Image 1 (tube, helix red, strand yellow):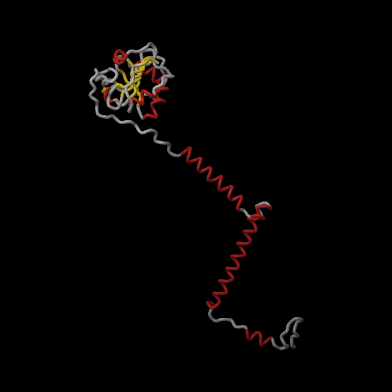
Image 2 (image 1 turned 120 degrees about the vertical axis):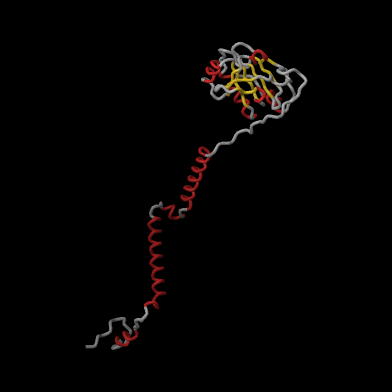
Length: 251
């Protein structure tokens, strides 16, 4: 029985055998490699389109209409801003002002211990018992406190004033007990003991510190008797670095 052609089949009757004979199966499958690779690319492209359609479904209509550039830009700005804040708060701090260094001792003609003369060649004792030369502490601000001095606010004020200059403040007390009591209130200052020698040399007022500004060359550049938390030291510190000598004054 001869199969009748189906509607739309323009092959002449009896041509089935001829068509089947024209279909050739290759002996080597490698000849189909190009076709297989094209099929794989087509499948991969279909998968990418499917993923893109699923992703677009997560965004509102306006994002699908105008693209996802705006949301991505907002997220990027937030991430960059967060990283910047973290660098500010967690990053390394500034090194602060450059510390002033000692220069060779001057040879003034005025007596030691006076304004314009060298700081006295005396020694002090640290809280740990080490003996320190006073002239080795240059440049410096010496804050001489008496027994029973409520000087914590004045010491904190002086610390804040001298810091930008790169000069160190040294709190000098007559006894270790006085120094220990003061350091419970202000631990930021370097504490030394001198038995009250420098207070006798430079004078002082009850319950108030005396401030002596020492230049980098060991010269006494300024003396402030009866200092308080409002005492201005900027001119004195300028003089300690490069300016002219100042006269003794009372705050």
